[in-house]
Length: 276
Image (cartoon, rainbow, N blue to C red; front, side, top):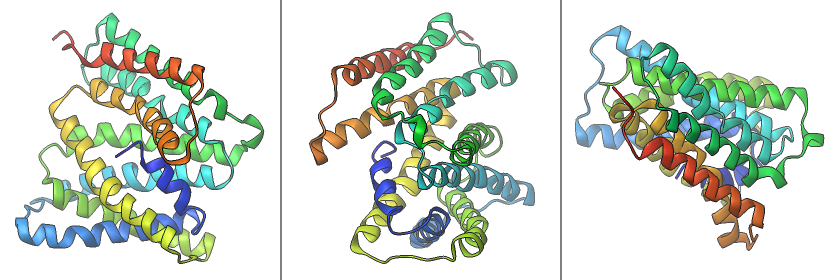
């Protein structure tokens, strides 16, 4: 679900600017959760502090992460650079978790983190175009990387016991309220309504904003932070496979070698428990 979102996002940004696109996406996702909340009789946070934690995590994970990455792509940064920068998240998570969260990593796991990043670099190497990169787009993607790294760890530390569905609704609603003024003031909230945009939004709302993020939250509650985020090395591989299946773009030998290195690195990080 996470890896396939790249293609849907690329399609959607052809018909709506990034903050406008995200405002629609977050609003629709929150609306889709309303009947789920009613049917499941979801548990809502009982204290203002719990609401605040969910809002902060939601702004980081949705508004900052996706706003940064979408804005960078909209202004021309290559998909390879975006994938490579975001693939630094497991390394950043490992450094933060080992330093401040007490999650000790075995040498084998550190090697896996490094190999995973190197493998992704090989996978996306042919898409790295430094000439299409501006300071504005690079800054936006870097902000997005900081958002998902901080948001994932913040969610793990302060929102572990939140109901997944009410928590998701609060976070998506907060993100929509945050990006809506940017869509209006910066972009004029202009949208070219087409069936392609509708299909991209439907795909990203259900599989991305709801299912993919909730899956990440469940994994972060149950597993070591570095082991979970190491799985985020894999979305570029999924994107390569989908490009081949959908558009007939055959991967190069270098891409296939990078995929093998990435999978081996993720296996080193994930397959065994870290020392207590």
